[in-house]
Length: 567
Image (cartoon, rainbow, N blue to C red; front, side, top):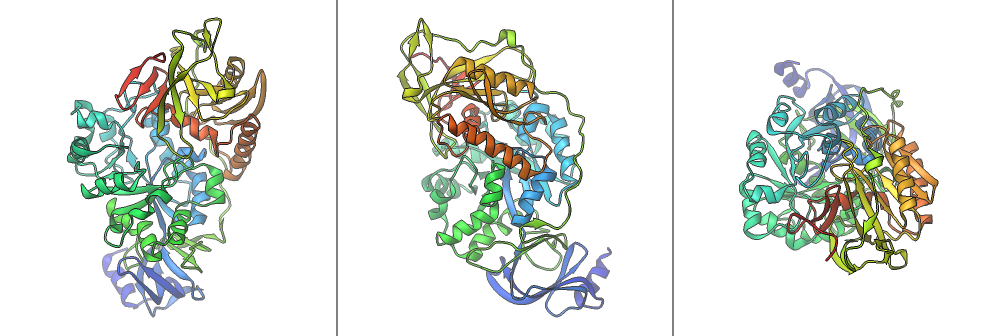
């Protein structure tokens, strides 16, 4: 619509399409709550105050805030494609997400990213993309694709691509690795997201010097404060396996909160449906003493401003009519959600039916030569490195412990919570298998297998015995990817994930039921973890300290090198 016509509607010369009447607007720019009306024309807000409109919705005194924005999310971790993911988060008030599709990109490359775009077209959510910078994450893994700087640069012309996604290989940045610097240079005029857990001092200064502007891996106030002081935007994360919100809330002050956003990173269906999404973070922050307007600003305008999305994030003329209505300012729970001027959700449910599932021409991604796969670990000593899982965190401990040995073969010892872990390469049928031990999963018997293993997404298996581990691994392979619980030669539960071994195109509530059954079966084997599959998927991510396992072997992340199992 021509600008002069928009101005005439803002003047009130013609009736708007929709008037939200009798609301209390939370102005995240001025810090006020204003009793007023909001006039909408097509997808835009044209004015606040006394307007005429063809349709009127009486908000009956409800609060009206901008639609919530997730500053960093991997949609694949919801186990459903973007169209279905949107049906889970939009009723919770999230109208915009900034996603890094590097999970599927590590499996399928640019084809995977294109799949995410195609799926998003069918959902009621604005999905912006950060071009995946770390495919692969490091040289110490095998994955299904490689994205060079010129591959990523080809995405820049897409208006939905905002910049370069989390640069996880921070040691390479600090060391002036040419390939990583080429990717940064290709997006130097765009937003550059970071990922640098534990980085400090001069190395952190070098990382920031590269132009990287954010971090979502902070676990302590001290770490976040140092990064804030050097100019980084802090994304406070509350994921399924990484709970950082409570620990970082003391960071927030009236003076610095404009440099803080909220993100979910990796959140599984049950947590989204039961607790919520960004709305859960807002409610939790307010309940812990954060001013409601500050909390809502961190969930809306701050992210919009950082990502240069100045067409949203606030309720003012000219911006998108993405808004949420709720009754309680101290515990915002949206009962109406508007996206682009249309009512899309009411009382926690979408107002439109779910579209039919689509068929996508994606290649098979489970490629394993089982004749080359051997989970046996020959004893080469008595003490070995052990991954120490820390509940609700992505970081792990680097332990050294006595390894049980039987007839020259190292075995799991569930009585000491010492389980075997293996990562089986599943992209190129190379036969590569990384093998080690883990403490903290808690299985007393049986095994768990999953084709979700950040970020290379090889097949990760944790178990109390080799038979159970092979049973679970073979079943995940035959499913075309998925999560499996096995005991001996018996399958106890499973969740097929045929889309790249990461997702399934089914209603999110149905996926949640299957996941709950799979988690329940895992707990029957002894684990008490909230989500053992999510937890073990991060045991394979070699860019988060301290000890991890890929198909290439154990990785000492602090030294950034592959190390032997035996000490």
